[in-house]
Image (tube, rainbow, N blue to C red; front, side, top):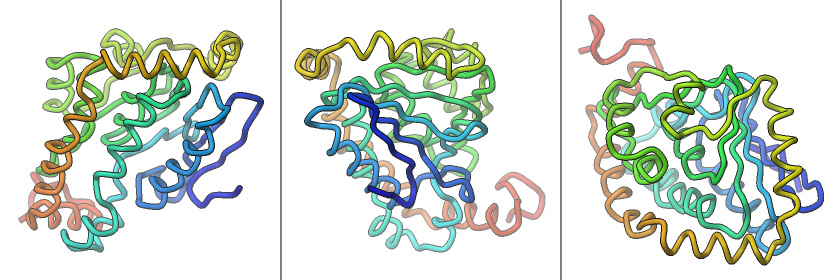
Length: 257
């Protein structure tokens, strides 16, 4: 199958799923979420490993601000609701396949959600990780349950407050990244040599077990989605996004008001 927002190919029991929105900085829109769900559904029966990647310069830069800037809060909830994105990350975290994030270049905001939801994160030295939401009066409500599970409350809290990017090595020290190497392609190949040996039934049972004992990601969905809806219903937040998209002005800069 062909997709508008993804490049997908299967190699035996491995699915390679690459975010492919180069003109939009690999940002997240409704179509991307729908197509990712479609691919993961195709992986349910026989795929043992899913490798998620972006381009060499941008893994995923979060929400598509240009699309948000042209929509009202009501339209955002209708056409780009947070629930399906949260469900997508739940599938990456708990689905019957090993999920591997292959990270190169910039990862921001919702892109961190994709990374934190995956079982393994393999990064190039070029990778940079940031949560920029608070700069626009937002916060990463749907990302945080997955990020806290991976790196702990305080480190996730600090990343949210500071908003600046951290390098791959620091992300590794935090526990967000499992291995760093350049070129990262060789790192991914070596991991796949091991992961290919795992049987589908074993992976399915193990992931189901880990989902059962690993915390309450599903239980946190309601509060996370409600917080996201509240933020994107705030007209001042939407105005800040429009001002940035149209004029490149951050909320704190002169003339922002």
